[in-house]
Length: 486
Image 1 (cartoon, rainbow, N blue to C red):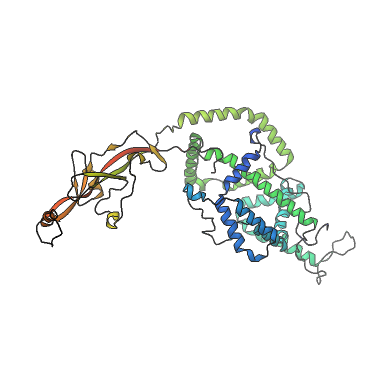
Image 2: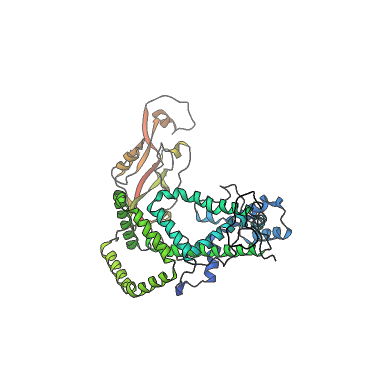
């Protein structure tokens, strides 16, 4: 294995440190819970669909027989039930149905990673990031005090005069890109000398080009090591931020989250009015100096000791005072939202001239003569029995039984239902009205079907009638387990 690759950007210093956040005793990793979370994070039908799509769309890329057998094996193991349709979940816009991109496939992922390494993108781009990260950590940790003081001076100038931000990119290109490139073409003489050498004259060396490190060199594995540590840093920082921000902002504790919301709202109003009066340059200068100073080991020890001596005894008292204030001043004991729902009992006449009605179904629509279902010739939709009527999704029943709506005339007028007869007393049926010829009515009693004879029109009760039942519902409290996804 080669020791290094010339002209390759790589962090040859100590590894990028991994950020460590103290964990509580109850936060020990549980392999069973992690395995269950991993199983429940990806729907099996979607994963199988992506595997099939990835294998079929990339069959021409030259996968080995082992990769194809692995793909087929995963397709057989994953069940084919459509969990999203069974649970009536909203469609996932990241699915391959909506995005014309290859689906998930282990052989395809392996092939893409090999191509990624073959083109050495990881050495040309990520290596620069690792070198920059290492040098930035050296500056902030006061490894070389003169370099950190120089950074502090530059930051002070920028904080006091923000217009210098426009100069920083140009100065960085000049100092860190073009000057080293010029010095590479005009190198110093090979002999050791205390006198400065002249950089005038024709170039003495070829221009420096960034060449990738070979896959079997130590530089390649150094970058892989730093990439591994950076992924751990990202996960640690992500978990620490969520642990700090999520409890007071996700309304798991509604009084606390409401207090935070009110404070942030008042602060936004104050800043909207008087932000131009604040000394932002002074604030940025104090923040910049504090951040750089906290990187010094002596300052860190002093801050930690001061916190243990002066702040730690009062933290519990302050937390107790805040909890008491929130409990007394933030009142959230409001009843759940309630609404009135309706269902229509539909009855159908047994015959054209019969006075008997049969119960047909309970429908959410009145199925009036001018409704879209009647015009299109569709049958009413609903349930056969009263006990099968369920509350809307996300709601539950607020009282024990249905109540007949005695204001039949009111809901007919609100819906502007026409061609109906309304009972204002009794059972409150709203029946269809049909205009019929009196001669036809008379001749229907006879045998046969005689020819049509014009006569006076008469109004009669139609085929359908309905009445309205009402019931109160309230919002249903959703109990979510600790492992439920956010």
